[in-house]
Amino acid sequence: MKTTLCLLLCLIMVSVAWASESTVNSLRGAVALDAPSVPTSPKEWQDGEGKIMKNYVQQPPLVPHDISDFTINRDGNTCLSCHNWNSEMPGATKIGISHFKNRDGKSLAEISPRRYFCNQCHVMQSNAPSLIKNAFKPLSQEEIR
Ligand code: HEC
Ligand code: HEC
Image: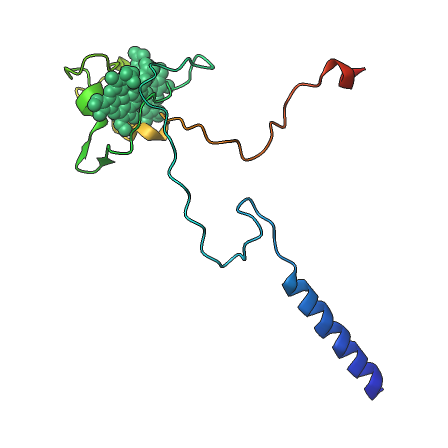
């Protein structure tokens, strides 16, 4: 009886040790879950190449310039200094009338609070490689046959 118990205990200990050794492979690699992340390298934001074509009609236009120096907080919104309807910045598209309507469709004199945090919808672009391959790539003619 004693030997069986001892054997069982040994088996459990070995399996626990084996389980703790195998690492979880997540998107950030085989790093222990409680280990700090490796700092990401600064991204090269697409800058000054003109407007970016939309992919679908309702799409909020993508930001064609760097926005890392601009702030949006309780005290102010730097985007508005160039994009507000009355800004004198040449070349910067002025925000349309839709951004001055509240959720009930009522027109406001100032930008609607729901449009205040611009980068909730408008995002800048970097040339970062995709994390995973395109899972929806259409099949080639050979694969269909
Ligand atoms: C210093 C002036 C300036 C500031 C500040 C600025 N922009 Fe722009 N923005 C421009 C100009 C000029 C363009 C036109 C394209 C270009 O020259 O890059 C533009 C283009 C855009 C466009 C594309 C519009 C379209 O019709 O395709 C978006 C979206 C945009 N900016 C969003 C933002 C957001 C969000 C912020 C704040 C985080 C911001 N911008 C701050 C000057 C500015
Ligand atoms: C809730 C999402 C949302 C937020 C927040 C938002 N936008 Fe937009 N924006 C859109 C959509 C959708 C469009 C395209 C349709 C339209 O003009 O309403 C657009 C259009 C624009 C355009 C192009 C207008 C034109 O006539 O082509 C500019 C410039 C712009 N937004 C700037 C801004 C700025 C600056 C802010 C922050 C002060 C902001 N947006 C906040 C969704 C948003």
